[in-house]
Length: 63
Image 1 (cartoon, one colour):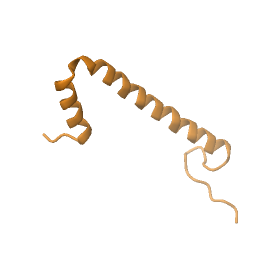
Image 2 (tube, rainbow, N blue to C red):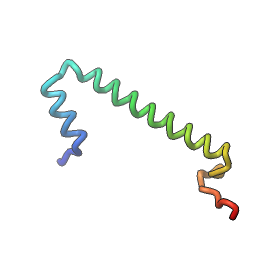
Image 3 (spheres, helix red, strand yellow):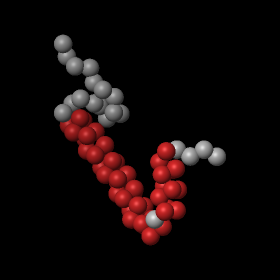
Image 4 (cartoon, rainbow, N blue to C red):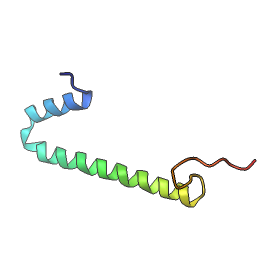
């Protein structure tokens, strides 16, 4: 089984610093939550400004 670079880092990190595993997991979850929040905020703003429709398709701009 091959690991991604992130997975390789995590395996190495947890072997070297097992006490920091909970902190690392919390940081990973927090980063994922922030990513989702930023993505949804950008989509909402784009929708409000009329750049995308309800299906997240980019609208053509009038020429």
